[in-house]
Amino acid sequence: MQVLKNQIDSHNESLLLQHEAKLSFTRSEVPGAEEIIQKLTAFQIAIPSWALGTGGTRFGRFSGGGEPRSLEEKIEDVGLLHALNQSSGAISLHIPWDIPQDYRATRILAAQHGLTFDAVNSNTFQDQPGQPHSYKFGSLQHVDKTIRQQAIDHNIEVIKHGIELGSESLTVWLSDGSCFPGQLNFRRAYQNTLESLNEIYAALPDNWKLFLEYKAFEPNFYSTTVGDWGMSYSYVQKLGSKAYTLVDLGHHLPNANIEQIVALLLMEGKLGGFHFNDSKYGDDDLTAGAIKPYQLFLIFNELVEGMDARVMNHATDLGWMIDASHNVKDPLEDLLQSVEAIMLAYAQALSVPRRALEDAQQNNDVVTAQEILQNAFRTDLRALVAEARLRAGAALNPVALYRSLNVRQNLINERGLKTVATGL
Ligand SMILES: [Mn+2]
Image 1 (tube, rainbow, N blue to C red):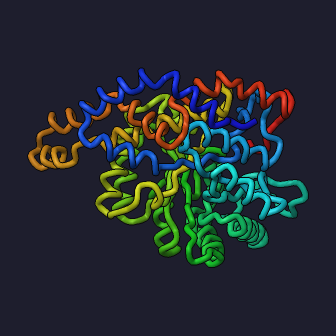
Image 2 (cartoon, rainbow, N blue to C red):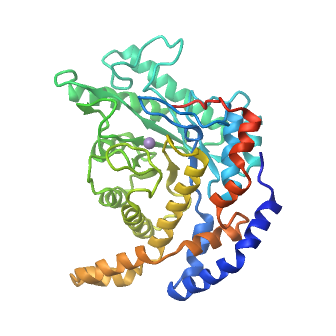
Image 3 (cartoon, protein in one colour):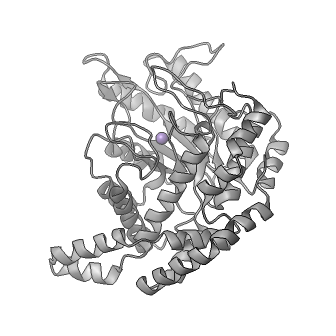
């Protein structure tokens, strides 16, 4: 299944008059609209290879049909998304769920869809068939050096796959921790993990980054060895200049001030990248912006301010990835919605009048500061995001075009109704 240029063109034609009217109103309301559109065009969000199938919970999984059966079909799915929105120009692979059989062919296929390879992800939170040692009691933290070594070797193998595909970063998320008081010596677990990470870090090419993701709880429910941004920061500080903290929005304790965490990590030069999703209770992995769109905006507000302060390139200097799962929606529609929500939050953050906000802060004018942020959040910038898509050759309304082309039914016809994508 491919979305053809003429299908996009005729879809856009049918919406053009309405779009132009909205755009011209938005332009009249938002100073700097043109600059925002240009920044949106450059901004790309990586799609994780594990989010293309229907996810599940520990209670069950309800497959939707037409799911990608191979890495090639996953690349095709991300290609579909990218054709529809021109904002999903990268794929993030999970090893061993997506080991490429033929690097050259995989690279060519991705390039045909306009895709690059974002961070590669290691997996030491599951045992794989035929694996000599179990990760039941941890991987990089394990009390037994043999098991730590197996996990180190796996990470180095993931780096090697990534090099072949042109990826430039490794994301490490550990489920390591403990479920009961007394199970673990916290300091020894930390030291074992640091020693293991040092060996992985030593295998990184010069132009690579290591992202260390943290998570407060789950699957371990008493302690997590990389449990919050402070712990991650402590590791990456020691590892070196190529190591950074990765923020997954769903990995915090309830009500954590994520925007403040982001601001401080950026200030320290140790924010590496993002996993976008949304949540109400825990690591719910819901569509970005579905529950707390104001929080997503406030995070982008800190990102834009903090990146500009360090003269960073918004599009390329941090890793932007989605990490979500889909239990009740078509995964591709869900991903289109996530990308849209992220682009909108980014556009809103770009529209914040920085000088006025700074003046309000310096004058302790709390009311004006709130007015400025809420005005940016409440101004409808969807026409700017749509215009960025239009100029890039994508669809004015990606979800509507996806539905009118019956993409899912086509995928079911091609792949079958009972297909299950590899992943969680
Ligand atoms: Mn994540």
